[in-house]
Amino acid sequence: MVEKGLKGATLVLAIATPFVAYWEGLKHRPYKDIVGVWTVCYGHTGANVVIGKTYTEAECDALLQADLREANGYVRRCISVPMLPHIEASLVSATFNLGPKVVCGSTLQRKALANDWPGACAELDRWKHAGGREVRGLVLRRADERALCEGRAS
Image (cartoon, rainbow, N blue to C red; front, side, top):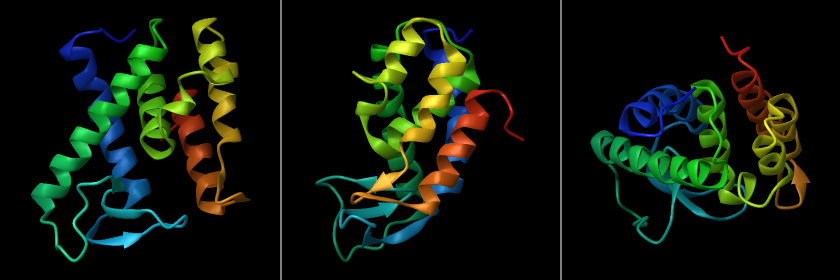
């Protein structure tokens, strides 16, 4: 199980960071994502995205770490039961990509709190839409997150 302190979070982020970086890709200049949200670096969004700026790799790495720590905070607040590091990392990835609704107030949360980890991991498959339509990239990412959640990731 993951320790709740810094050591546990460090392990989870060590798993989540390359996973999220792979799925998001690195873009040094801001762009509009599939639903029109200004995005930069490894999928960073928010009011601090500066249109027209070219971000350095160090800036992108710092944004990714801050974003993953924030996502991990939601995971730990909303799923307050012990979980294995790979499970937590998969939920951090999904929360980073989709927002806290994945782990806070969802069926996934209910199943996780009941220690129904197979059911919780299977819930990841449901989150594959953007702009009201199914997106192949999200189908593939959720399948990869589910594999990580279930301990099947390579």
